[in-house]
Length: 259
Ligand SMILES: Cc1cc2nc3c(=O)[nH]c(=O)nc-3n(C[C@H](O)[C@H](O)[C@H](O)COP(=O)(O)OP(=O)(O)OC[C@H]3O[C@@H](n4cnc5c(N)ncnc54)[C@H](O)[C@@H]3O)c2cc1C
Ligand code: FES
Image 1 (cartoon, rainbow, N blue to C red):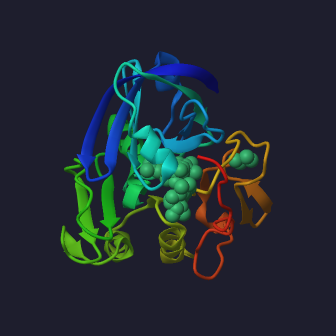
Image 2: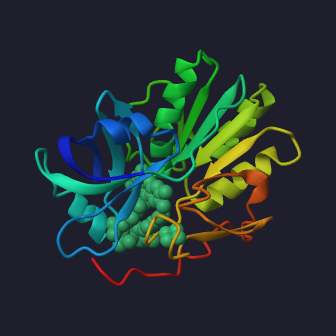
């Protein structure tokens, strides 16, 4: 884990309220594994850092893909190339690479945690890797030509939810599943592979404060007790996680009291 001032070398708006931000730091870039995240300090006056998956790495740079959803991400979006932000990372445990026909399932911005994983599968000659992404509507213009896309309103790709596409992949022999997105979606992904002996890894995006295991604000319930998502996760085996009935976050009621 490194803490460093990282210079922004590129910022690109890829859709409404969605940005890719590229930072320069050779060590964070080289150490980052798929599914790990960085914790970013948003500058003077901001107390809590914000966590973002490492979206991609290239030479001495790493990038994040983020959506503006509140005060923190709004502030992040105001930063420009040549400015620097204090970054801690890479944090957490990422995805193990398993399976000959893996399928990657992204819901909304959850796709950000899967891009580097896809790259690593391709690097290791697992050309049968499939990517399926689901959005509520056609808001995300992220370039990922290999992905099958569906939207709830049918405005882009197939009409429906990702678990529909996942079931088709499971019928055609997918042998490992990796997913990141809203917890209600992750619960359905876990249900889809339950009892099928298909390793299924889910990346949880809980509210975080410290990001390094000290405050317990991110805990989730597992079959072996409470686990810190920032430290023991964010990636867990699906049959370890105990979701509530709807799959909603148990710590979602916590509100940040600062900007
Ligand atoms: C390990 C991890 C990786 C993440 N990776 C990414 C990423 O790659 N790209 C990205 O856009 N976002 C990612 N997130 C979510 C991101 O951290 C939050 O969107 C961000 O912290 C919101 O800060 P804010 O101050 O703008 O919003 P807030 O004012 O805190 O919240 C605004 C709205 O966003 C919702 N929200 C806030 N935090 C989360 C969260 N953790 N999960 C779901 N909804 C949330 C709130 O319910 C509220 O409706 C990740 C979160 C975690 C824990
Ligand atoms: S965010 Fe503090 S323990 Fe996970």
